[in-house]
Image 1 (tube, rainbow, N blue to C red):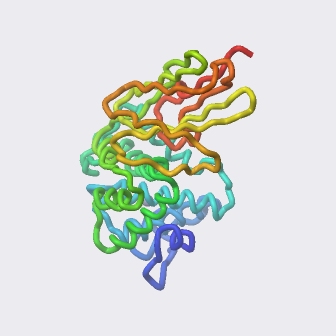
Image 2: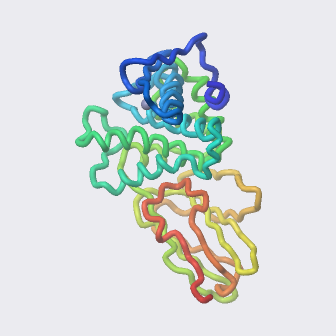
Length: 309
Ligand SMILES: [Zn+2]
């Protein structure tokens, strides 16, 4: 509860009850039902999840039939992070379960847009993955686009300004834009109103004069800003950042090392050429999105490793 109070905003009531009986994890206002005979970790997990619902399902109270991902997804996101910290799991990537769930959905052939009315999904599994996993990944990627500090500032402002007012997706977008200075309509549209997917690839790495040309390709419809890590054979590491023009802005560098910001990737282009000041022989490896926060559906084409050794 302290974690949620700090990361999202203060719980406004004097009581919360965990009631042993009935359903095996079901949220109500100020209350959850739980079942017994569960392992400790499972009991903590279900209690954390149902408790987190008090912020999103109860106090913010979005319309669950229309925007179920704004409750189940955001609840999953914050309770997963809370468990990781409080149980000292120290996972390097605590949201990996949500990302795996989304990637299974995106390659399943049964995905429908997140904006689908909850009663109108063809498959229950598609509804569930869309609400829980794709909803949690919405925030994971928002943190990738605007930065982790700005993500939590967005969540706190959103909770503060919209508690008891039934916010809609655009209300969250407007706050994230105000907090970050980055335009986000493209993100909300592609992620929630379509089943467009993300796939960037390192199409070619070629020697060019005294340097190297990396040819990047966007293979699916959804655009994203890119972070590219270059590992040099002399032990040096470089970070490159390519915003997209739709953002009309860029993220502050979240890393402790410097990065090079490149011109925007124009939104309709499927290719982008990145020039490095190093000879090809000096490059050990190149990686698209070292943070893994971008839900790229095919990571096998995100890497280049020098084969000559
Ligand atoms: Zn839930």
